[in-house]
Figure 1 (tube, one colour):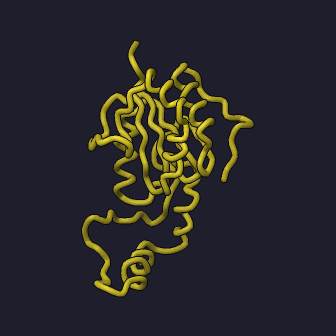
Figure 2 (cartoon, helix red, strand yellow):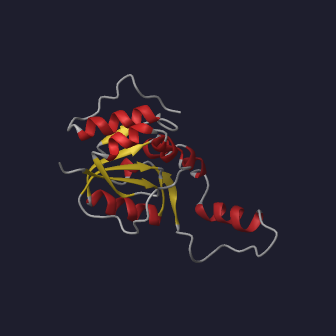
Length: 176
């Protein structure tokens, strides 16, 4: 039996959704028989692969790098899942939206440091004017709110998708 090719991606977020994914504990062993984890912060794959069956995306689209990454991921994924409040609504990352990116960089790299105050010109991707939920950049197939979503909910969503069904999350999810 061929295993489903699964990826997890971390954009602008806190990694809480990935921690919740790891909280699946022994259920991960059951999933391991059915999936191949082809890309994730949990593995050492550098390039997002082609032909991914399901990608779980955590975090908002906040930088030019995030935007390019999610477009590439969408083009290579059959089912894209917005995982968690930051991916679904842009949640905490959007708290910066009333400010311009230059003000944020100035506050982080000039005003709050005492040594070598300077805004980096490399290794920090340019910020977009606003942090945005994933669906404002690419088509999303399944929305899983929660901060973070529970391990049980993530397991349920993956099980449904592996069975070829669209998860019915009515009554199972909440924001925050």
